[in-house]
Amino acid sequence: MTTSRAVLAAREALASIDLSSYDAEQSRLMDERCILVDEQDNAIGAMDKKTCHLMENINKGLLHRAFSAFVFRPSDGKLLLQQRATEKITFPDMWTNTCCSHPLDDFEEERVEKEHLGVRVAASRKLEHELGIPQSQTPVDQFQYLTRIHYLAPSNGVWGEHEVDYILFFTGDVTVNPNVNEIRDHKYVSKEELQAMFNDPANSFTPWFKLIARDFLFGWWDELFKRKAADGKIFAKSLLPLVDDRVVKM
Image (tube, rainbow, N blue to C red):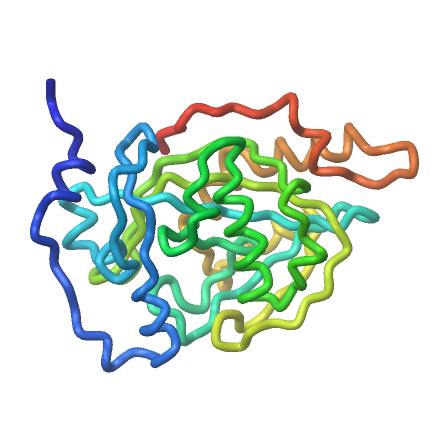
């Protein structure tokens, strides 16, 4: 039986890099340990974020678990976007979905795979860390998992992403108090406003957000409106019938 490239990469002596020239806080966060997975999203170990995001290691097949959270306002269905801070080591200054990060091997609960609990717990944690949204406003049981995508994207030659990325929708009225070391800007947009942003060459977007928007986001967004509650509000959990638990290779 052929062993997967991701499994082989996890066994190799992997490249490292000196982070002393980067932002101190962002460098510290690179010590957090991601969950390594194979191409079928089976957990096979753990590795620090710095190692996971070096293209030299990604090109060997190293693969880790991640999530992309999309927070919508229930009353008008607008999506909360963020623009990543200049201090970010990967994909700085780019617009993206509400929050994109990783469940960590460092936290036992974030390793739990049943009912996608680990990624939902991580999403609530990181929404608070990046956008200052209190975790009390993002109950873990209100995130709707939709699917997983497997994608690879370089950032600037040195850095990149190679992830099995869990897509999570959430609807709620949230209080945003951004962490300026994480986020340069944020705003709510309608579907039409986001399409206009994509058409404006002055804007740059993270590759995973562009992939998700291209293949999934707008269709699911339409479904949220089709499934509005009697009070006219959208509700993420209404998309439960659309869940696809395959790992979709992009």
